[in-house]
Length: 599
Image (cartoon, rainbow, N blue to C red):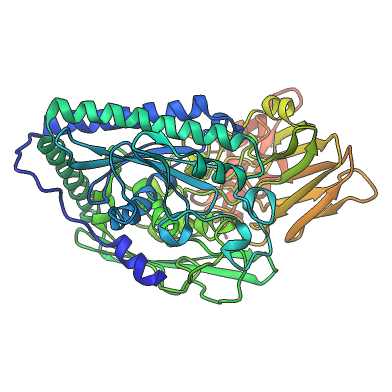
């Protein structure tokens, strides 16, 4: 049933029925209003939520889905969440009568086998009706929750072989019926969660979608249902047309890439993601045939909805950023995901860790495949960290968990003409990684340092951003969990650029018991233990010997690049002293050295 359901959920939907004609200006005004509603709903959630992963790190997304289940507007939040909300709404639409869905209802979904991502990504949504009682839209809010009621806190069970180990699945339940909160369901959701913050988060999500419903009802009343439907149809068709215009400028052909995950959580090595991107005229097909389908793998199963979303996250990053993100993106791209592979698992496979890997390898493979087509936009939208170090303990208030969503520098690769920049992975867009001070105020931890690592970015004509070394001390006995990847297969360089540095992770640093995490860890740490996570930096773009020697000198002065790497990797000969900032490029010696290195 699962594969058949996936096909139904992903099937193309037609335009909304309407007799209204609309001009592009009015359509764009309504589209802008949709974007504002999404912004207001997501901001409401961010300000009202209880847990730091939402109110600090901003891991949330608002979207509007029409009555046919098409994404009408996605805005405000992490990009991959933008492209998954409509799948859960489509399941609700298929069951409108059986679930007795009507005006004033607020629904909750998170089920990986019914259109969802992984279990922690709760989606709360509500229908929006016209004054005449016609269903027009759904407003959705999706946010990552700190726990899912499974075997392990956070829902990330390293050895899970099914989704039931990870937590509670909600295909579609009502939190609010006809405007009245269902205390029985609300209390059930709260009871199946380890953290008291879930009650505040759910209340904030309900309030956010109810706020969105009011705004959208007012918009429908102002313009009329037919005009709103015409505006949605216009916007989706315009996006599809703009996407196809971009593809028509690309050279026809098939472009392939393979990316490997170091190992699954049991240590099975070299888990493969393969993609073929085929351009024919104004069409693009992204085909994941050849992706690993070994059924014995553990921890590397990505939901079908998430896989579609990650493909689209990378594709839209490689076209004009002004193109509106809606269902037209999917209408313009054929996505082929073989049934039974790790990107479309059989029913009940675990899903929590899959939204890290292979999800990120999907975007990386698409980027690598298309880097020869649109090198100026070949920026991988990913985070290559296996999972952050989750630190868990108990106090008088109960269980607490520092999920390790710390500010850090990682995975920001160079693109043609621009060095890697910033201190968070680009795919997370609006994610604001947690402040050190906030985590220290909430949890018994001390952030000792987080420094960019010299030579921590891939060399290239344009250099990747250096990764950071994050060092943290636990002040009480705690449990820590980790899954390490991207040590054997770090982030790949583009068009001749060097790979990023690999990830590494050490527990009980500086003590006689210090050890390196090779694959996974569920460790009991004593009070005072130090953990140090070396994050991989961004990859380089283009051959390093083509980099401007003056730019290399500036990198050395900024301690992004060492003196040794300036000479050995970039072929740049520097005179003077770094200590007193008298470095200068010896251009003649540099040219001679580069000729020798090329030979």
